[in-house]
Amino acid sequence: MSDSLSTISEKAGMPPGSLVHVGNTLEEESRISVIDYNKEKIQEQQIQSIDQTLGFTEKDTVTWVNIEGLKNVNIIESVGRLFSIHPLVLEDILNTHQRPKFEEYDDHLYIVLKSLSLENEEFKVNYEQVSILVLNNLVLTFKEKQDDLFLPLRQRLQNSKGRFRNEGSDYLTYAIIDTIVDQNFFLLDSLDDILDSLEKELLNDPTPKTLASIQRVKRELINIKRSISPLRELLTAILRSESTLIKEKTHIYFRDIYDHILSITDAIESDRDMLSALLDIYLSITSNKMNQVMKILTIFASIFIPLTFIAGIYGMNFEYMPELKWKWAYPTLWAAFIAIPVILAIYFRRKKWL
Image 1 (cartoon, rainbow, N blue to C red):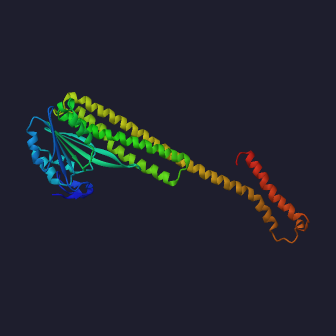
Image 2: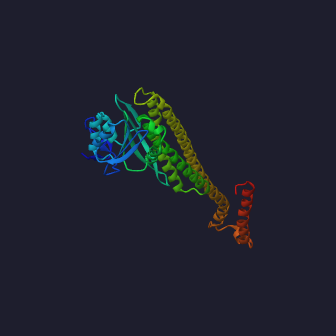
Image 3: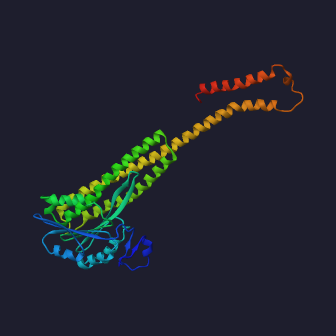
């Protein structure tokens, strides 16, 4: 079965545990890679079928199976069959609209979280769901696409001669989550640069495009917060777990991730406040510009009102207007036309209205 649905609403009416991929299809073909290691040796290879992992799990090693691409539902079914995974967990793995969470079962743990990466300089963020199954000396990760997210972690495993290769699946789980969470620091650095650029643009020459950029970044920040905020609850649940799959000595590392999440959350709140301030500044600048325009128009109107009044009086067609017969009436009127604007302009300048 390889059916794929784009939205969760399309799955309405199906029985619980129905294995259907829900979300955008980021990879047409699935890739399965295995890293099997202990303190003496490490082996990394790609395999064609989940059944091949049995040859690794029977040894006294830690095995990490990474599955990239979720469209092939048969692979997920095989995982459930081989390792006795609850059907609802398998369903959640295939539903890429999951909220980050931690679930504890008798012989395995299920963790799901979002990996965030920056697509371009205009701050478009890619969201990828990463699901983690933790068993005794076995960790399975499920990703939506093939990328280099875990490349630093694989290199670290290859080069490690110390703690990493001596620890169990709980420490590997910590390292995977830590890698995903630390991606957010790079994202926030890029966000800070964009906010600085928006602030400079705002203070120099704001345009409607500036407002559109502020709104776009603000909307993206809301999505980022929606993906990161639940991680505090997730880590708290892990630290409170009494599962034997997470050793007590590994808790200190999960607490370190929790501290990172607090820092990231605080940074997001600060950036959100900054965006709100930038929006207020834009509205204030726009309002001030409008006030300046209205001020100039009002001054011009104030200058021309008396001139219009005079012109209106002498534009009337009354027969008996004695001053129309005066010799110096026309030059006098022009003198008044010139003097009145000059006097008003001097007055406005002294009042600092100009």
